[in-house]
Length: 364
Ligand SMILES: NC(=O)C1=CN([C@@H]2O[C@H](COP(=O)(O)OP(=O)(O)OC[C@H]3O[C@@H](n4cnc5c(N)ncnc54)[C@H](O)[C@@H]3O)[C@@H](O)[C@H]2O)C=CC1
Ligand SMILES: CC(C)CC(=O)C(=O)O
Ligand SMILES: [Mg+2]
Image 1 (cartoon, rainbow, N blue to C red):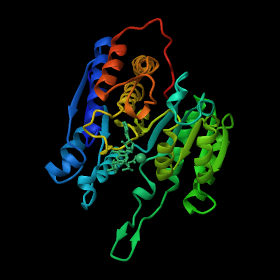
Image 2 (image 1 turned 180 degrees about the vertical axis):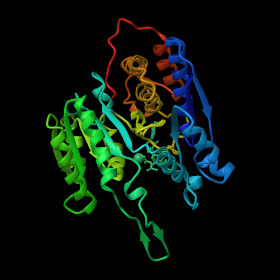
Image 3 (image 1 turned 60 degrees about the vertical axis):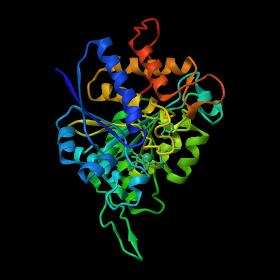
Image 4 (image 1 turned 90 degrees about the vertical axis):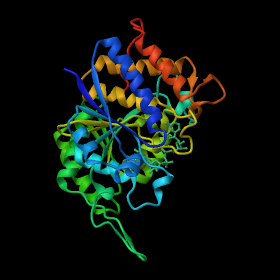
C-alpha cells in the first residue's frame, strides 16, 4: 500500500532542504520499488500570511490522516514581532500528534571526525541519542502570561508524562549499549526531583541497563569534553532543545542533525533539529543532510524500511567521504558545494546499488 506522507516545508531554508529530501525519497522509491504519496501543506509563517494561523485546520487534518509527516523548519524575522508566531504552530502540531518522544541521534561518521570543530580525538567514536520529552514542560505549561511589568512561564510535569519518556529511553538503551544518562536540575527544580525519582523507580525494572544522573550544567560540559561517554541521554523538553543544538558540533554542524518524534500510535514527525536559518535562506548554503537523515529516520521508524533507511545513510556517508562539503562544514579542503549539488551527490549515490559497501547502522 502507498505510504501517505504530509510534507510541511515551512519557512526560510525549510523549503530548500525539503526539496532535497524529496529528491532522495524519489531515489528510494525508484531503487527499491516503493510508492510514496506526498501531500504538501502550508505551515508556519507562510500559513500565517495566507491563512492567518501557523497550523491551518486542513494542514492538521492532513497530518493526522497520514502515515508520517516530514517538516522543514519554521520562523523568521518577518513574524518575530507578531503575537501569532510560526513556532506556535510547531508546538501545536507536536501536541496534536502527541509525539512525546523526540529522538535526536548524535553520530560521528567513522573517518569524518575532522568535520567537527572539536578535536578529532575527542569526538572519535561518539554515538549517542537524545530522548527528549517533547510535548510537556515549560514550552507548554500554564499559566503563561505577560503584562507590562511581569512575565510568567510555568514548568510543570505529571508523573505520567515523565514515566512514558523514561520508559522509552530504557527500551532504547536495551537495544543499544545499555546505558541511560538522565539529565535534570534536581538540586533546584521540583519537576527534576520528581523526574529523578521516576528514573530511579524505572531503573529497577531495567537492571541490565546502567543508569547515571547528571545535572544539566555539568552535562553540557561533559557532552563536549567526553562525548563518547554517552549512549542514551534522556531529558526534559527545554534541556533537550538546548543540549542537542550544543551537541551538533560533535558530528560537525547543526545542519547535519536529524530527528524523529514518535507517539504511542499515529504518524511520526520527522524534522532536522535546526531552525529556518534566515541568515542563509535563499543563498544555496543550507546543508540538506539533517533533513535527508530525518527522512531516513522516517523510513526506519514509521515504515520499518530498515534497508532503505541504511541506504540513505550510506549515501550521505559516501558523499562526505568523497569530500563534498556545504559551507557550514567546509574547512578549506574538499569540494565546496551548494545545497542543490550536495543533494545531487547524495541522490546519485542513493540510486547506485553499491552492494560492495557495508551498510552503516549508525542511526537508531
Ligand atoms: N524546528 C524549527 O522549526 C525551529 C525553528 N527555529 C526558528 O528559526 C529561526 C532562526 O533561529 P536561529 O536561532 O537562528 O536558529 P537556526 O537553527 O535557524 O540557525 C542557527 C545557525 O545555524 C545555521 N544553520 C541552521 N541550519 C543550517 C543548515 N541546514 N545548514 C547550514 N547552516 C545552518 C544558521 O545559518 C545560523 O547561523 C527563528 O525564527 C527560530 O524561532 C529555531 C529552531 C527550530
Ligand atoms: C519552537 C522550538 C521549541 C523549536 C526548537 O528549537 C526545537 O524543537 O528544537
Ligand atoms: Mg531547538
